[in-house]
Image 1 (tube, rainbow, N blue to C red):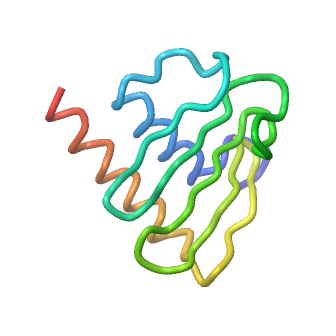
Image 2: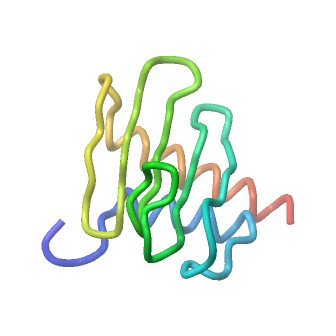
Image 3: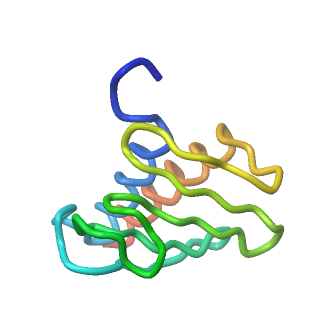
Length: 100
């Protein structure tokens, strides 16, 4: 990524939008999950429950993967693969759009 929105955050945001998050500047945490990830997305300007402003905490459900992402980057740990995460959230967004 060079100065724009990270590809992982964009895939995540597309998924969140497909799940009904229209306001990315809202109160508190938005919590949701996919078959692989538990998600807490802080849409506010202040830290909430340890999640920085405008960031998403992603916790793997099957393996001990964890990520903290935001529009400009983030950190991925526990052996999680960024490209696999991007594919996952893009596929999940497609499924959510078909279901709505």
